[in-house]
Length: 346
Image 1 (cartoon, rainbow, N blue to C red):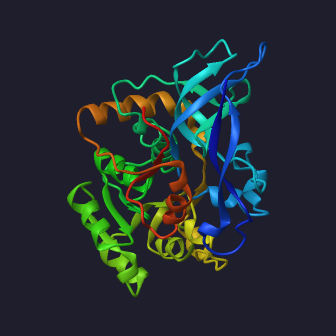
Image 2 (cartoon, helix red, strand yellow):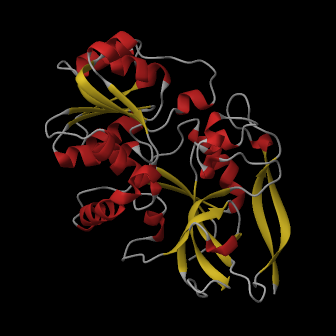
């Protein structure tokens, strides 16, 4: 049985600046909806795919990240792009999966995925939650926020926490986890609307629009008169520099992402005298570092969801053809919460 598959590729590497529509191409190709006898492969109809800024480093002709871990390997021109998402099994030669099973894992920026040996794919029990939750808050975005805050930052109740890109897929959850834990939390975002969202809906103690602040160092000093204990960094660059300058002794920085540096060759580094004399810990991490905390993460987060203690921010656009614009929008701050593209009806 054969169908057609529409999928997104890159036409040119994105080595300088922000991604543009001209970097991408929507392709159509014949696609088999059955597996060969004796094959261990799984054919998946994609339902929802995650749109994440780190993918731009895979779209460069070279990035140090490409050699660090297998899911960050470079993407060849014209090659289908893999990404985290949720789908439904169409056909399977793998005994772990049956037709119509819901699955979560590495699928593709396309309408269908052929997963060799069913690798990086798991059966999905929705547990009564929308499938999109399993792409975002109950997927790697949630685990990133949970692992980064609780395992990297090791918070103590009452500590003062600063979160950058706080209205993004990870930052909004870090702020909510921190408030539920009993911390004082300040977030920054790139619009007045997002700032209001952080304070009025998500419960942040304070928030500010970094685009309107002429002196970020003074802004942080005003909002943290007693200093910052924890900085959850999603942007890098100048924000990391000024956050460290306002940190307390034994402060902790969890470096989750550096989106300001993915497309800008300018770099800004913290004052290392601050790091040494304040004994500040700066640690980069990936969600996969904390798979051993996955059960705790799921238990805690599901409980928060069921008791309405945590709010879910999702930004969903329809159609595989909208993937490039959805991805480009991340670098303009267009998204609020987790950016997801809906590929097909459930």
